[in-house]
Amino acid sequence: MPFHAFRRFWQSREGHMALMFGILAPVLLGVAGGAVDFGAFVNHRLELQAAADSASLAAAKEAGLSGWTENAARAVVESYLDINLRAGGSGIYTADVQVDATAKQVTVVLEQDHRPYFVVGYFQGSPQIRVRSTAQASNSSNICVIGLHPSDEGTISMNTNAVLSAPRCAVYSNAESEKGLISEGNANLIADLACTAGGFGGAARNFNKLPLTDCPSVKDPLESRPAPEVSACSQHDAVYQSFVGQLNPGVYCGGLTIRASSEVTLKPGVYVIKDGPLIIESSSHVEAKGVGFYFTGPDARFEFASSSIVNVEAPKTGPMAGLIAFQDRDSAEADFVITSNKARKLLGTIYLPMGNLIVDANNKVADASAYTAVVVRRLHLSKGPNLVLNAEYNATSVPVPEGVGPQSVTTRLVN
Image (cartoon, rainbow, N blue to C red; front, side, top):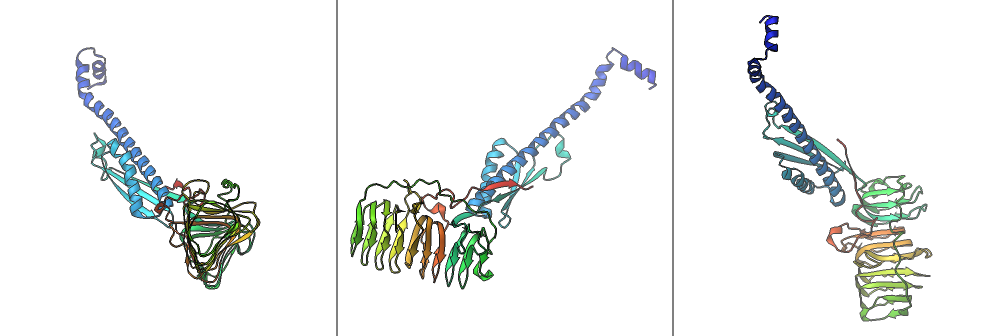
Protein backbone atom coordinates (compact mmCIF):
# COMPACT_ATOMS: atom_id res chain seq x y z
CA MET A 1 0.00 0.00 0.00
CA PRO A 2 1.49 3.38 -1.03
CA PHE A 3 2.32 5.67 1.87
CA HIS A 4 -0.34 8.26 1.01
CA ALA A 5 -2.99 5.54 0.87
CA PHE A 6 -1.91 4.17 4.25
CA ARG A 7 -2.08 7.71 5.62
CA ARG A 8 -5.64 8.15 4.39
CA PHE A 9 -6.53 4.79 5.96
CA TRP A 10 -5.05 5.82 9.26
CA GLN A 11 -6.81 9.20 9.27
CA SER A 12 -10.13 7.74 8.20
CA ARG A 13 -13.05 8.25 10.59
CA GLU A 14 -15.05 5.49 9.02
CA GLY A 15 -15.38 1.87 10.21
CA HIS A 16 -11.88 0.79 9.26
CA MET A 17 -10.58 1.50 12.81
CA ALA A 18 -12.93 -1.10 14.20
CA LEU A 19 -11.44 -3.59 11.80
CA MET A 20 -7.91 -2.60 12.81
CA PHE A 21 -8.60 -2.96 16.52
CA GLY A 22 -10.29 -6.25 15.84
CA ILE A 23 -7.08 -7.43 14.28
CA LEU A 24 -4.78 -5.98 16.98
CA ALA A 25 -6.89 -6.73 20.06
CA PRO A 26 -5.75 -10.35 20.50
CA VAL A 27 -2.15 -9.23 20.26
CA LEU A 28 -2.65 -6.44 22.80
CA LEU A 29 -4.51 -8.76 25.15
CA GLY A 30 -1.75 -11.34 24.82
CA VAL A 31 0.91 -8.78 25.69
CA ALA A 32 -1.09 -7.52 28.67
CA GLY A 33 -1.86 -11.06 29.82
CA GLY A 34 1.77 -12.03 29.48
CA ALA A 35 2.83 -9.08 31.62
CA VAL A 36 0.34 -10.01 34.32
CA ASP A 37 1.38 -13.65 34.02
CA PHE A 38 5.07 -12.82 34.37
CA GLY A 39 4.30 -10.66 37.40
CA ALA A 40 2.47 -13.57 39.01
CA PHE A 41 5.44 -15.85 38.24
CA VAL A 42 7.87 -13.42 39.87
CA ASN A 43 5.62 -13.10 42.93
CA HIS A 44 5.38 -16.87 43.27
CA ARG A 45 9.15 -17.15 43.07
CA LEU A 46 9.56 -14.51 45.79
CA GLU A 47 6.95 -16.31 47.88
CA LEU A 48 8.83 -19.60 47.59
CA GLN A 49 12.15 -17.92 48.40
CA ALA A 50 10.69 -16.26 51.51
CA ALA A 51 9.23 -19.58 52.64
CA ALA A 52 12.55 -21.36 52.09
CA ASP A 53 14.42 -18.64 54.01
CA SER A 54 11.99 -18.80 56.95
CA ALA A 55 12.15 -22.59 57.04
CA SER A 56 15.96 -22.82 56.88
CA LEU A 57 16.41 -20.18 59.59
CA ALA A 58 13.92 -21.91 61.89
CA ALA A 59 15.47 -25.33 61.31
CA ALA A 60 18.99 -24.03 61.96
CA LYS A 61 17.91 -22.37 65.19
CA GLU A 62 16.13 -25.50 66.39
CA ALA A 63 19.10 -27.68 65.45
CA GLY A 64 21.43 -25.39 67.37
CA LEU A 65 19.48 -26.16 70.54
CA SER A 66 18.40 -29.76 70.11
CA GLY A 67 20.86 -31.42 67.73
CA TRP A 68 21.82 -31.58 64.07
CA THR A 69 19.71 -34.43 62.70
CA GLU A 70 18.10 -34.43 59.27
CA ASN A 71 14.80 -35.84 60.53
CA ALA A 72 14.43 -33.08 63.12
CA ALA A 73 15.33 -30.39 60.59
CA ARG A 74 12.90 -31.80 58.04
CA ALA A 75 10.07 -31.76 60.59
CA VAL A 76 10.69 -28.07 61.32
CA VAL A 77 10.91 -27.22 57.61
CA GLU A 78 7.68 -29.04 56.78
CA SER A 79 5.80 -27.29 59.56
CA TYR A 80 6.94 -23.90 58.27
CA LEU A 81 6.04 -24.75 54.70
CA ASP A 82 2.60 -25.92 55.79
CA ILE A 83 1.97 -22.49 57.24
CA ASN A 84 3.61 -20.37 54.58
CA LEU A 85 2.78 -22.22 51.37
CA ARG A 86 -0.05 -24.67 51.58
CA ALA A 87 -2.34 -22.16 53.23
CA GLY A 88 -1.51 -19.73 50.44
CA GLY A 89 -2.29 -22.13 47.60
CA SER A 90 1.16 -22.09 46.03
CA GLY A 91 0.62 -25.11 43.83
CA ILE A 92 2.52 -28.36 43.83
CA TYR A 93 5.97 -28.13 45.40
CA THR A 94 8.63 -30.45 46.78
CA ALA A 95 11.20 -29.73 49.47
CA ASP A 96 14.66 -31.19 49.97
CA VAL A 97 16.40 -30.67 53.33
CA GLN A 98 20.14 -31.07 53.85
CA VAL A 99 21.98 -30.80 57.18
CA ASP A 100 25.69 -30.08 57.60
CA ALA A 101 26.46 -30.59 61.29
CA THR A 102 30.11 -29.59 60.90
CA ALA A 103 29.29 -26.23 59.34
CA LYS A 104 26.11 -25.93 61.48
CA GLN A 105 24.03 -25.30 58.37
CA VAL A 106 20.59 -26.31 57.11
CA THR A 107 19.84 -26.05 53.39
CA VAL A 108 16.30 -26.05 51.99
CA VAL A 109 15.66 -26.53 48.26
CA LEU A 110 12.11 -25.85 47.07
CA GLU A 111 10.78 -26.74 43.63
CA GLN A 112 7.39 -25.76 42.20
CA ASP A 113 5.82 -27.43 39.19
CA HIS A 114 2.48 -27.82 37.37
CA ARG A 115 1.09 -24.43 38.30
CA PRO A 116 -1.16 -23.13 35.48
CA TYR A 117 0.29 -19.97 34.00
CA PHE A 118 -1.22 -18.05 31.06
CA VAL A 119 1.98 -17.73 29.02
CA VAL A 120 5.04 -18.30 31.22
CA GLY A 121 4.36 -22.01 31.54
CA TYR A 122 5.17 -22.47 27.85
CA PHE A 123 8.66 -21.05 28.31
CA GLN A 124 9.61 -22.63 31.65
CA GLY A 125 11.07 -26.09 31.94
CA SER A 126 10.46 -28.49 34.78
CA PRO A 127 10.50 -27.51 37.58
CA GLN A 128 8.98 -24.14 36.87
CA ILE A 129 10.60 -22.55 39.93
CA ARG A 130 13.58 -23.72 42.00
CA VAL A 131 14.87 -21.77 45.00
CA ARG A 132 17.56 -22.55 47.56
CA SER A 133 18.21 -21.21 51.05
CA THR A 134 21.02 -22.05 53.48
CA ALA A 135 21.00 -20.85 57.08
CA GLN A 136 23.87 -21.15 59.54
CA ALA A 137 23.72 -21.20 63.34
CA SER A 138 26.33 -19.85 65.70
CA ASN A 139 26.76 -19.74 69.49
CA SER A 140 24.74 -22.91 69.66
CA SER A 141 26.67 -25.08 72.12
CA ASN A 142 24.98 -25.92 75.40
CA ILE A 143 27.13 -24.68 78.27
CA CYS A 144 27.72 -27.16 81.07
CA VAL A 145 30.97 -25.96 82.72
CA ILE A 146 32.35 -22.50 83.40
CA GLY A 147 35.56 -22.08 85.41
CA LEU A 148 35.33 -18.48 86.62
CA HIS A 149 38.84 -17.75 87.91
CA PRO A 150 40.34 -15.16 85.56
CA SER A 151 44.01 -16.07 85.79
CA ASP A 152 44.80 -19.26 87.70
CA GLU A 153 46.65 -22.12 86.04
CA GLY A 154 44.40 -25.16 86.01
CA THR A 155 41.17 -23.28 86.64
CA ILE A 156 39.75 -26.45 85.11
CA SER A 157 42.13 -29.35 85.68
CA MET A 158 42.09 -33.12 85.37
CA ASN A 159 44.78 -35.66 86.13
CA THR A 160 45.51 -39.36 86.74
CA ASN A 161 42.55 -41.30 85.27
CA ALA A 162 39.89 -38.62 85.58
CA VAL A 163 37.29 -38.21 82.85
CA LEU A 164 34.97 -35.30 82.21
CA SER A 165 32.20 -36.50 79.88
CA ALA A 166 30.28 -33.61 78.31
CA PRO A 167 29.75 -34.77 74.72
CA ARG A 168 26.74 -32.51 74.07
CA CYS A 169 27.88 -29.33 75.76
CA ALA A 170 30.70 -26.84 76.11
CA VAL A 171 33.41 -26.44 78.75
CA TYR A 172 34.84 -22.94 79.31
CA SER A 173 37.83 -21.80 81.36
CA ASN A 174 38.03 -18.04 81.90
CA ALA A 175 41.67 -18.21 83.03
CA GLU A 176 44.07 -16.31 80.79
CA SER A 177 46.94 -18.46 82.06
CA GLU A 178 49.11 -20.39 79.59
CA LYS A 179 47.50 -23.49 81.09
CA GLY A 180 44.08 -22.26 82.10
CA LEU A 181 42.68 -25.68 81.12
CA ILE A 182 44.62 -28.85 81.95
CA SER A 183 44.05 -32.50 81.10
CA GLU A 184 47.16 -34.58 81.81
CA GLY A 185 48.28 -38.11 82.64
CA ASN A 186 45.57 -40.52 81.54
CA ALA A 187 42.82 -37.95 82.00
CA ASN A 188 40.36 -37.32 79.19
CA LEU A 189 38.15 -34.33 78.46
CA ILE A 190 35.23 -35.25 76.20
CA ALA A 191 33.23 -32.19 75.17
CA ASP A 192 31.33 -30.78 72.23
CA LEU A 193 33.51 -27.71 72.67
CA ALA A 194 36.38 -26.90 75.02
CA CYS A 195 37.41 -23.25 75.15
CA THR A 196 39.99 -21.44 77.27
CA ALA A 197 40.73 -17.74 77.58
CA GLY A 198 44.41 -18.64 77.76
CA GLY A 199 46.13 -21.85 76.72
CA PHE A 200 45.88 -25.48 77.72
CA GLY A 201 48.07 -28.22 79.10
CA GLY A 202 47.98 -31.82 77.91
CA ALA A 203 48.45 -33.90 74.79
CA ALA A 204 46.04 -34.49 71.94
CA ARG A 205 45.16 -37.88 73.46
CA ASN A 206 43.81 -36.11 76.56
CA PHE A 207 41.01 -34.45 74.56
CA ASN A 208 38.43 -35.73 72.12
CA LYS A 209 38.74 -32.30 70.44
CA LEU A 210 41.67 -29.98 71.05
CA PRO A 211 40.55 -26.93 73.04
CA LEU A 212 40.20 -23.56 71.39
CA THR A 213 42.55 -20.99 72.90
CA ASP A 214 42.32 -17.24 73.51
CA CYS A 215 38.54 -17.44 73.74
CA PRO A 216 36.60 -14.50 75.16
CA SER A 217 35.78 -14.94 78.83
CA VAL A 218 32.26 -16.07 79.62
CA LYS A 219 30.42 -13.76 81.97
CA ASP A 220 29.10 -15.36 85.14
CA PRO A 221 25.56 -16.20 83.98
CA LEU A 222 24.22 -16.30 87.54
CA GLU A 223 25.79 -13.15 88.95
CA SER A 224 22.42 -11.39 89.10
CA ARG A 225 20.56 -14.33 90.62
CA PRO A 226 19.11 -13.18 93.98
CA ALA A 227 20.27 -15.19 96.97
CA PRO A 228 17.71 -16.97 99.15
CA GLU A 229 16.61 -15.22 102.31
CA VAL A 230 18.45 -16.29 105.46
CA SER A 231 16.20 -16.24 108.51
CA ALA A 232 16.77 -17.27 112.12
CA CYS A 233 18.54 -20.53 112.89
CA SER A 234 16.37 -23.63 112.74
CA GLN A 235 19.05 -25.88 114.24
CA HIS A 236 22.52 -25.44 115.73
CA ASP A 237 25.46 -27.78 115.00
CA ALA A 238 23.08 -30.47 113.78
CA VAL A 239 24.53 -33.99 113.82
CA TYR A 240 22.54 -37.13 112.97
CA GLN A 241 24.05 -40.51 113.84
CA SER A 242 22.38 -43.76 112.70
CA PHE A 243 19.30 -41.72 111.93
CA VAL A 244 16.48 -42.97 109.74
CA GLY A 245 13.88 -40.37 108.87
CA GLN A 246 13.18 -36.99 107.32
CA LEU A 247 14.66 -33.55 107.81
CA ASN A 248 12.98 -30.22 107.15
CA PRO A 249 14.29 -27.25 105.19
CA GLY A 250 15.57 -24.33 107.26
CA VAL A 251 18.71 -22.60 108.46
CA TYR A 252 21.31 -25.01 109.82
CA CYS A 253 23.66 -22.81 111.82
CA GLY A 254 27.01 -24.43 112.43
CA GLY A 255 26.36 -26.85 109.57
CA LEU A 256 24.72 -30.24 109.15
CA THR A 257 26.44 -33.61 109.54
CA ILE A 258 24.83 -36.92 108.58
CA ARG A 259 26.89 -39.76 109.97
CA ALA A 260 27.26 -43.44 109.16
CA SER A 261 24.30 -45.81 109.07
CA SER A 262 21.84 -42.95 108.48
CA GLU A 263 19.12 -43.02 105.84
CA VAL A 264 17.81 -39.50 105.44
CA THR A 265 15.20 -37.96 103.19
CA LEU A 266 15.39 -34.21 102.91
CA LYS A 267 11.99 -32.66 102.40
CA PRO A 268 11.67 -30.23 99.48
CA GLY A 269 12.83 -26.68 100.09
CA VAL A 270 15.90 -24.54 100.73
CA TYR A 271 18.52 -25.73 103.22
CA VAL A 272 20.72 -22.85 104.35
CA ILE A 273 24.07 -24.20 105.53
CA LYS A 274 25.45 -21.37 107.65
CA ASP A 275 28.81 -20.98 109.43
CA GLY A 276 29.69 -24.63 109.02
CA PRO A 277 29.81 -27.51 106.52
CA LEU A 278 27.34 -29.99 105.09
CA ILE A 279 29.00 -33.36 105.63
CA ILE A 280 27.54 -36.64 104.42
CA GLU A 281 29.74 -39.36 105.87
CA SER A 282 30.51 -42.81 104.51
CA SER A 283 27.85 -45.52 104.83
CA SER A 284 25.07 -42.94 104.92
CA HIS A 285 22.30 -42.46 102.36
CA VAL A 286 20.69 -39.12 101.50
CA GLU A 287 17.79 -38.55 99.10
CA ALA A 288 16.93 -34.94 98.32
CA LYS A 289 14.26 -34.16 95.73
CA GLY A 290 13.23 -30.55 95.19
CA VAL A 291 16.12 -29.46 97.40
CA GLY A 292 18.61 -26.60 97.08
CA PHE A 293 21.56 -25.92 99.41
CA TYR A 294 22.63 -22.33 100.09
CA PHE A 295 26.07 -21.92 101.68
CA THR A 296 26.92 -18.76 103.63
CA GLY A 297 29.38 -17.75 106.33
CA PRO A 298 32.72 -19.21 107.47
CA ASP A 299 33.43 -22.85 106.56
CA ALA A 300 30.18 -23.19 104.61
CA ARG A 301 30.92 -25.99 102.15
CA PHE A 302 29.97 -29.61 101.41
CA GLU A 303 31.74 -32.94 101.59
CA PHE A 304 30.26 -36.19 100.25
CA ALA A 305 32.39 -39.03 101.61
CA SER A 306 33.50 -42.04 99.59
CA SER A 307 30.96 -44.68 100.63
CA SER A 308 27.98 -42.35 100.93
CA ILE A 309 24.95 -42.48 98.63
CA VAL A 310 23.82 -39.03 97.55
CA ASN A 311 21.00 -38.18 95.15
CA VAL A 312 19.95 -34.55 94.79
CA GLU A 313 17.38 -32.97 92.47
CA ALA A 314 17.07 -29.18 92.42
CA PRO A 315 13.78 -27.37 93.09
CA LYS A 316 11.49 -26.58 90.18
CA THR A 317 10.30 -23.26 91.63
CA GLY A 318 11.33 -20.70 94.22
CA PRO A 319 14.62 -18.87 94.88
CA MET A 320 16.70 -22.00 94.26
CA ALA A 321 14.87 -23.16 91.13
CA GLY A 322 17.29 -25.19 89.05
CA LEU A 323 20.12 -24.89 91.61
CA ILE A 324 21.50 -27.78 93.64
CA ALA A 325 24.08 -25.60 95.39
CA PHE A 326 24.45 -21.83 95.63
CA GLN A 327 27.42 -20.26 97.44
CA ASP A 328 27.18 -16.79 98.94
CA ARG A 329 29.17 -14.49 96.62
CA ASP A 330 30.77 -12.77 99.63
CA SER A 331 32.16 -16.03 100.99
CA ALA A 332 35.83 -16.77 101.38
CA GLU A 333 37.28 -19.29 98.97
CA ALA A 334 36.32 -22.85 99.98
CA ASP A 335 36.64 -26.43 98.75
CA PHE A 336 33.52 -28.44 97.94
CA VAL A 337 34.52 -32.09 97.77
CA ILE A 338 32.89 -35.17 96.24
CA THR A 339 34.69 -38.43 96.97
CA SER A 340 31.48 -40.48 96.94
CA ASN A 341 31.37 -43.31 94.43
CA LYS A 342 27.58 -43.23 94.56
CA ALA A 343 26.74 -39.59 93.90
CA ARG A 344 24.96 -40.62 90.73
CA LYS A 345 22.14 -38.07 90.61
CA LEU A 346 22.97 -34.37 90.81
CA LEU A 347 20.15 -32.90 88.75
CA GLY A 348 20.53 -29.15 88.38
CA THR A 349 23.25 -26.51 88.51
CA ILE A 350 26.11 -26.28 91.00
CA TYR A 351 26.93 -22.58 91.46
CA LEU A 352 30.01 -21.83 93.57
CA PRO A 353 31.37 -18.41 92.58
CA MET A 354 34.08 -18.57 95.27
CA GLY A 355 34.23 -22.36 95.50
CA ASN A 356 36.55 -25.03 94.18
CA LEU A 357 34.63 -28.15 93.18
CA ILE A 358 36.91 -31.14 93.75
CA VAL A 359 35.74 -34.50 92.42
CA ASP A 360 38.02 -37.22 93.76
CA ALA A 361 35.98 -40.40 93.33
CA ASN A 362 36.62 -43.68 91.51
CA ASN A 363 33.30 -44.05 89.74
CA LYS A 364 30.80 -42.20 87.62
CA VAL A 365 29.38 -39.04 89.17
CA ALA A 366 26.06 -37.40 88.16
CA ASP A 367 25.50 -39.88 85.32
CA ALA A 368 21.89 -40.59 86.41
CA SER A 369 20.93 -36.92 85.97
CA ALA A 370 19.00 -35.55 83.00
CA TYR A 371 21.39 -32.62 83.13
CA THR A 372 24.09 -31.19 85.35
CA ALA A 373 25.76 -27.81 84.95
CA VAL A 374 28.76 -26.51 86.88
CA VAL A 375 29.63 -22.83 87.38
CA VAL A 376 32.50 -22.64 89.87
CA ARG A 377 35.67 -20.73 90.64
CA ARG A 378 37.75 -23.83 89.91
CA LEU A 379 36.98 -27.42 88.90
CA HIS A 380 39.48 -30.14 89.75
CA LEU A 381 39.13 -33.86 88.94
CA SER A 382 41.68 -36.37 90.19
CA LYS A 383 42.13 -40.11 90.70
CA GLY A 384 39.47 -41.95 88.69
CA PRO A 385 36.14 -40.14 88.56
CA ASN A 386 34.02 -39.86 85.46
CA LEU A 387 32.02 -36.67 85.92
CA VAL A 388 29.14 -37.11 83.48
CA LEU A 389 27.42 -33.89 82.46
CA ASN A 390 24.32 -34.85 80.54
CA ALA A 391 22.38 -32.31 78.50
CA GLU A 392 18.93 -33.91 78.25
CA TYR A 393 17.13 -30.70 79.15
CA ASN A 394 13.81 -31.85 77.75
CA ALA A 395 13.84 -34.96 79.95
CA THR A 396 13.15 -33.06 83.17
CA SER A 397 10.96 -30.26 84.46
CA VAL A 398 13.79 -28.93 86.62
CA PRO A 399 14.52 -25.55 85.01
CA VAL A 400 17.87 -24.67 83.49
CA PRO A 401 19.11 -21.30 84.76
CA GLU A 402 19.56 -18.76 82.00
CA GLY A 403 23.13 -18.65 80.77
CA VAL A 404 23.86 -22.35 81.23
CA GLY A 405 22.39 -25.23 79.30
CA PRO A 406 20.88 -24.33 75.93
CA GLN A 407 22.06 -20.97 74.64
CA SER A 408 20.25 -18.52 72.44
CA VAL A 409 21.20 -19.33 68.88
CA THR A 410 22.10 -16.71 66.30
CA THR A 411 21.19 -17.66 62.75
CA ARG A 412 21.93 -16.03 59.41
CA LEU A 413 21.36 -16.74 55.74
CA VAL A 414 24.56 -17.64 53.93
CA ASN A 415 23.15 -17.89 50.40
